[in-house]
Structures are given as structure tokens and as C-alpha cells.
Length: 130
Figure (cartoon, one colour):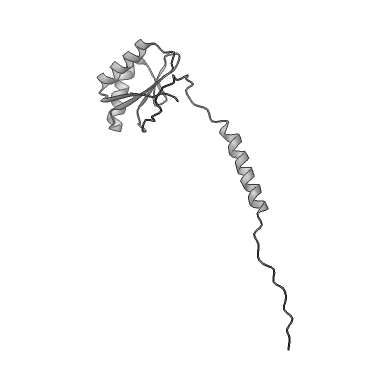
């Protein structure tokens, strides 16, 4: 006796919804990435070497108006030594990275370097852009 067999359709995966979702995610991230802006605006000088410094938790930043920041918190120059000592003791790190606008005076750079050394910094690095 012959039985009638139904033809089975092969299972398949619908790719159209997957492509739609990936496209929407791509558009979302492209649009949202345009809104990310740095907190402190600076025009950093260019360097010839392309080495990237390893992450250090203590960064001294000076903007074009010669406002001093320690890890994005503004600090007066007269309070810089005490603030650096407190941060270094709390973090137990004595490495300081210096970032500054290219228009600051050399005198300001040397003053901050001296204050950092007096505060107990054992390593002082200058960060640059590519």
C-alpha cells in the first residue's frame, strides 16, 4: 500500500528583520557619536612621536586661559601643591601627566612642573596629540 507523503519544506531563517535591526543600530550609533564632546576644550600641540601613554589616574590640565584642572576639577595655582599631595596620597600614585593648550606660557609650564615636584611627584609626563 502506498502512502501519500507530504513534501516537507526546509526550515529557513528570515534575514530581513536582522538586517533592519543592524541598520537601525548603525544609524543610532552614528548619530549619537556626534554628540560626544570633550569637557575641556584645548588646542594641543602636535608631536613627532606616536607613543600613547599608559593610563594614569592623576592628570594636570591647563586650558588656553591658564585655568588649572586636576582630573577635570578646577584648582587655583596657590592650592595646586596641596591638592596634588592629597590626590597622590589617596591614589598611592606619584606619576603626573601634564596636558596643556599650546598657547600657554612656558613660565606656567615650569611653575606647574616645580609645584608637582615639590608635591612629591616622581614621574612627570607630557601628553600630546597625533
